[in-house]
Image (cartoon, rainbow, N blue to C red):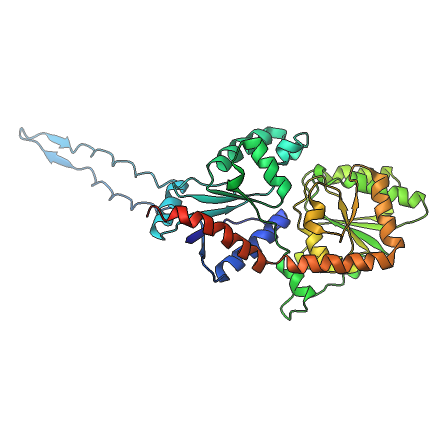
Length: 397
């Protein structure tokens, strides 16, 4: 089949979503297999029609009875025809390029009349609707309106874990055979560094660049409430009370919660340990993995998250939230903690600091998983899924 991978511009501040889409576009267009992939997007707006010629100037003429009369104004030109709406422009593009299927990867589908594959990143607006980022200002209703219709009409739905498949079938009544587990692959830049590729991003001296001294934990996460920064700050406070100071480096775009966290760090008496670095280049993210004592990924959303895969590829110890599905996806590599319990998080951090032999074994196990979970494997699994639908799609032109 010929498959159109729908793309649209996304900002780098999207974080993992930006990395995933950038990798996917590169690998899809270079892929050679049983199915062909091409990028497609909404064509630009139609050029405006040429303006009508200007009306002739008014003039005086001599009437039959020798009166002077003015030539009347000509009728106004008709309004220009409306341009094609975006959906129509995409539909015409799809027809012209003879696609058999469209693929929307974590992008709201556009109805063109063609069957489509949709990837669902998460259903957290159903699972944890109390978080403002998935519910406030009409966000819950917007997500539900878009996803419910899109999921139920999709030819194929892919999700990142078995748990996500069960949730999707439960919430939206989709037949299980229409939903396929396709775990997200490790970002390619992390694999390139791990394998010593010459075109891998250069390692940056992040300690000097961001004025960081001593051992530190690293948490690359946008400043959303669900990222659970506050419980991580409380864990750092507990460690200080135990006589174990360790710095914490936080990177990510601010989505309204950073001021709350800065105040919390002050209130907890650990402001001197916390580095708010803001949004940083992706190359710096990869370099932070190399320098950190551990990735402290304590998000309350998951388990389909990219930073743990990046960290494992880069041989960085991983402290990870105990969310259903993490052991299936990440094996025995991470140290798993209860994300709502600061003491559990503190214990996990202390375990990493105090047990170097066991951590080395976990690093080795994690790296093996991260390198195996690559884009070649991803597209091999995707091809098998598409093979099933190809037997149906050939029933019409």
